[in-house]
Image (cartoon, rainbow, N blue to C red; front, side, top):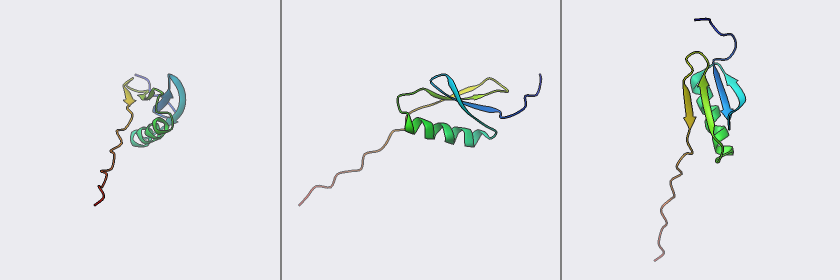
Length: 70
């Protein structure tokens, strides 16, 4: 196995490479931000060393409870 140089994690939007990160946590946070800005796009983080892919899902936003008037 050869060691790759550069960033280990690649962030893709709809299959197109958009960004690279060295740290997994930062890569996931950046991908979540991209997903927030592009809710209908497929956003994923790929580990270049292992080939594993993490697909970012649209977060479920809880609706605040409505208070009823008296």
